[in-house]
Length: 183
Image (cartoon, rainbow, N blue to C red; front, side, top):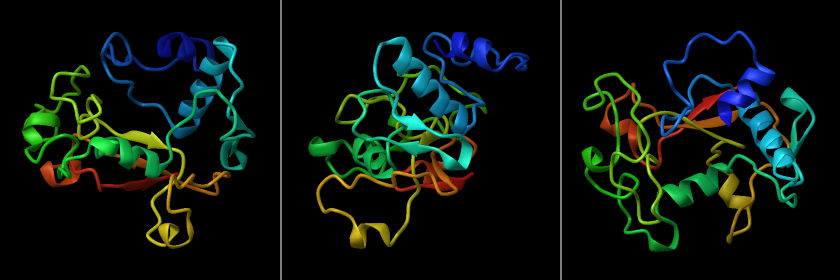
């Protein structure tokens, strides 16, 4: 589906060496392309898209039933194993080699999803392999004023997304608390 979406909406992309096909992770899309894909897939499946607006004016309707990017808090909750969490440093283990691809064990390549062990929720590649886009970004003060249960994150984009975990860093960079800010 990702390939079909990009062919329809972003013609002329360079060869992606099979990424985004089969069990290969999607690579090289912007946060805005990820949002556009969520809306496109929602419409294709007859769901109400979550996003309106363009670029920095994009807003998310969390009450819509379409696909959307997780909030930073949702991503971290899922990566840590949700209610089944054993409190591991990485998503499903305290040993990064069991659950993550990163610079010391990846050979500098992205790997098909699901070759390492899943976390407690059965989710693969929540540590390592590549970045994941989140709707909002980590703010150390956010949790001081957010709802204690199920913090929803921001409804408008403001200016940044959070991107999570990448192979180009060592094991310390693939923990469930690692964040990088991108526009």
